[in-house]
Amino acid sequence: MMPHRPIVLLVCAALASCAQAPQRAEPARPGPTAGGTKTSPRVVVAKPEPRKPPLPDIELSEELLFKMMVAEVAVQRGQPHIAVQAYLELARETRDPRVAQRATEVAWNARYTAAALEAAGIWLQADPGSAQARQIIAALLVNQPRLSETRPQLEKWLAAGRDNVGAGFIQLGTLLARHKDKAEVFKLMQTLAQPYPDVPEARLSVAQAAANAGENQVALDEARIALKLKPDWETAALFVAQSLQRLAVPDDDAVRFLDEYLQSHPKARDVRLNYARLLANSKKYAEARKQFEVLVAEYPQNADVGMAVALLAIQANDFDAAETQLKRVLELNYKEPDVARYYLGQLNEERKRFDEALKWYGSVAEGEQYINAQARYAGILAKQGKLPEARQHLQDATARNLVQRVQLTQAEAQLLREANAYQEAYELLGQALDKMPNTPDLLYDHAMAAEKVNRFDVLESNLKTLIKLRPDHAHAYNALGYTLADRNQRIEEAHELIQTALKLSPQDPFIMDSMGWVLYRMGRGKEGVDYLQKAFKLRPDAEIAAHLGEVLWAIGQHDQAQKIWGGALKDHPENELLQSTRKRFIP
Image 1: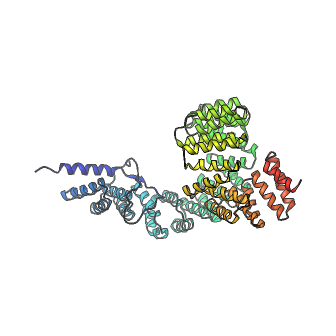
Image 2: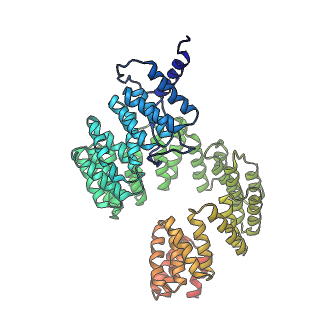
Image 3: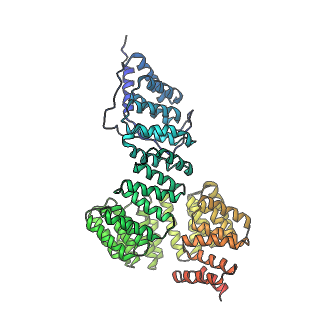
């Protein structure tokens, strides 16, 4: 009689597979509690943990070998209903963490969530020190549709790792942040944190959940408690500053807080970076530069700090400091040199040192910054009156894929629009769309080009096609709705389209502007002003200013309208819409 060699080999293969454990499951992916699907995501597989889990004292009998063979063959044959049940029974019987680990992986990949949760529980019981098992259990629990029902299991999960409960809260907070029901997450996190009032990570997790649920005062209070419990924790300090900003208090409050924190914690690098950023945002450029100097002096060989300082200097319009830092990070072998080269190109372009800018843009290799660099390179050529050369440069640029080819075409069309060559831009995008039909970005840009050449039929057709392809494309709804409203046509339909866009992107200032404009067209100017004012506060754009001024004038607020137009014209003196709108009311 032949020995069970094939079986032993198969079991060895299975146990080797067990050793490759899922490091973390995709936490945002929901899964059914029973049943499987034909196409299932794979668990993210990581290297084995550098530790030896405790193994049970159990004999590898012929019966056990046969069961494992059945389970693994079922996996290979794509029979999840057999494989999951067989591995789960093996995990129950053996209490072997390797078998339970394999059972968890098989069940997760087959989307048998209840089975995966049970197997992972056995895994953690068999090997209480396994961080991977704990992580997967948390991911499985937060994927449950009714989050409140997971509270008992999550409480046990946290209690099981009481020695490191802070890390558990951080992990759990990250997973729960992706859950759609933010209010429910906040309630759950409050309950879970209640037994741990002196654990700073628990309090900050509550603060983060509160912020996501819009409970900004609670977020601030909890973050302050976390910082009091752990005064050196920069993450908590930064969250306090962010909470102060979310509460719409003056920026000076957040600035003052960070300043005071740095006085007692002068080595808090991330806090100082954010402090400098807030100073730059508040246009306190001299004070911001002092912080740049402190950071550079303290971390002269840190390329990441140098890059952060360079970006802050750009924000503060301190181009000399920015250029110095960008060149320095290149000398320090910064991990993303093309990012530094690209910003050096931008700096020199801003200062109208075009030859130097072209040199830096031209040095950007074929990576993430390549297409943007080529577009800026061509833009400089166009500014120099070399539009044909600029177009040829974009046509000659290397496109590694369809996305990049579309981006280069969009850049070329933008050059034509800036040169007021609207018909050529329309034709260029139309030709590209013929070669790459149903490409969302081309459909949208071609629609916008069609508006410039009075081809409303093409605009409407393209945007309706885009909406069918991408029902979540907020700007497609907005563009069609705004165009109808601006033409004073099919106003009710325009209103519905813009409402849909606003639901998809409620904080977009341009969509807010469209809503204000369509309400004005509907004779509801006072309602429209609210949207337009919010839009203008978020984005003081010339077109939004033109609309806001017109609606303010229409509802009798003439002085306020003139103030809006006057201020906008100082920043955008050549904007045609702004000029023409004002002249209609103030000849």
